[in-house]
Image 1 (cartoon, rainbow, N blue to C red):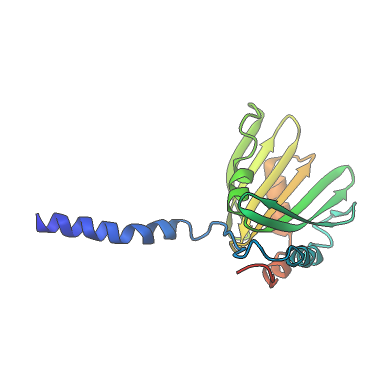
Image 2: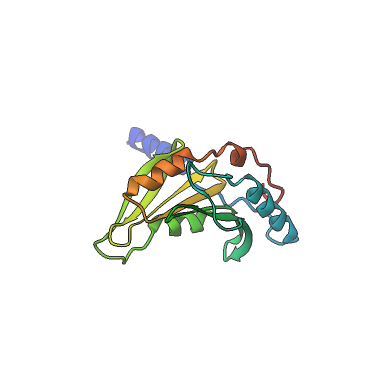
Length: 187
């Protein structure tokens, strides 16, 4: 009986550590002071805008990159996006930061009721677990992953030849400038 009680006590003591270990790669809600002046997140969005890639393989910007700053129930989310083109193909790169935990869960889930032509699978991008969505009828593909637990990186490609098209573009994108950013509005 004593051994059983010791095992129970040990499992109760280790449970929080095991739960934390399972989420060690997940996104963080990184904004502690949600009452701060919103200009700090505007400034951080501008920093993200500055490091968006100038090109992604043969895709060049077709529209001006834009920063954004919004707030969800969980707090501020900010970042930047840019639309690139290569002939008739269009690639949208969007980077988000701030309180992104719930936002990532929504993006990774994708379009749950999109029908048979819609497929979701896992992949690896820059060493991180990623979710890939593919619509064979619409020829759209997107990939979403978390970088350094503080950035959601999403790429959407139309038309795509396959779901792997967008994964290859995500791998080709230089993320070093993004990972080097120091953002003022985060912990």
